[in-house]
Length: 67
Image 1 (tube, rainbow, N blue to C red):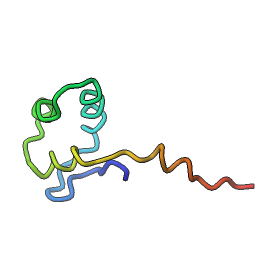
Image 2: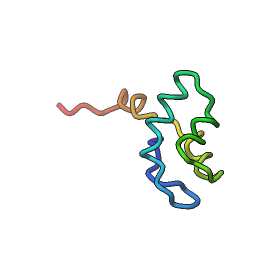
Image 3: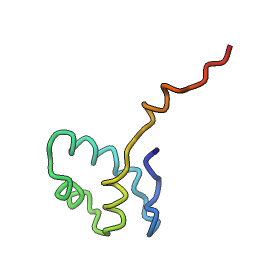
C-alpha cells in the first residue's frame, strides 16, 4: 500500500508527515510521542499513519520489463 495522501476518515493531509514519522520511529522513538510532536491529535489520522506500510519497494520486484 502506498501511503495515503489524506486521512480516510476526516480528509486531513497526512502524507507529508509520514517520512518524518517513519524516520523517527525507525530510530527507536515512541510512536505516540512522535505523533504528538507532529501535532497529529485525531485518532483517525493517528491510525492512518500507524497502520500504513510503504510497499513500493516490494512491488517494484514485480515490475514487468518491456522487451
